[in-house]
Image (cartoon, rainbow, N blue to C red; front, side):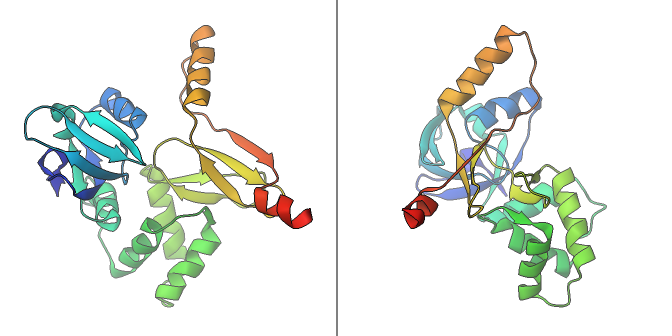
Length: 216
């Protein structure tokens, strides 16, 4: 594991751990820098700030902050550090390695049962109870986030930078989006009411483009 400040230009890495308090973490989250985020180093001259790209956006990052961000070459390796870095009482097992490999590759919102099926495609010997326990561990660590999209089943996604969702009421498609304007309006509202927010979730229901085309 290395610090982001030591990465060479042109390299891509995944955030494994951020050494800092809540204030630093909130600031970095606003830049899109959270655990498991993919970071591409654009400029690193060993002095002064770094230029990086996160989710397609170029960001200037102070060197002192970059020195507090620990990275790994793969998302799976970053996930292991996020889980076990400060939890020596949780032993790494072969079964949990398989489960983490499946979860680190998540690109959609899956139920626990769907995650079990994907794990069993890799190793049929792994029981559902083991998968459920690992999911709970990842939720407790803030690595997986449970989501409810107006249905009975809870779905899980990897925690990355904050985003909101569009949900198609016909096919069930879930589309993630980020809007700086929406975020700013929310900040304005909370400031106006002298309200301190801890979290928020925005879900917009409607009909996706594919369903509209198929019914036209």
